Image 1: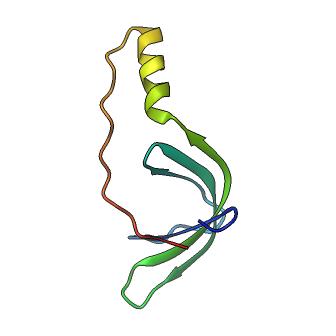
Image 2: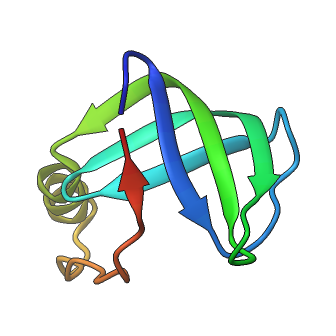
Length: 85
C-alpha cells in the first residue's frame, strides 16, 4: 500500500477499471484496477486505486448474524497474496 494505491500479484488478468474488493486480515479494500501487466513468471501485477477501506468485518458479521437470528459465520481462511509497497 502506498498512498491510496494498492499493489498485488494476481493469478489472472483483471481488466482496467474493474471494481474490486480485496480482503486482508480484518479489512476490506474497495477500489478499481488502474493497471494490470503480466510479469516474467506469468503472474499479473495489479495496481488498485483504493476508494474505501472497511475494517472490523468479523465484528459486523457477528452483529448482523445476531440481529437476524442466524448462526455466527466462521472467518474464511484465504491463501496469502503477495503484496508489495
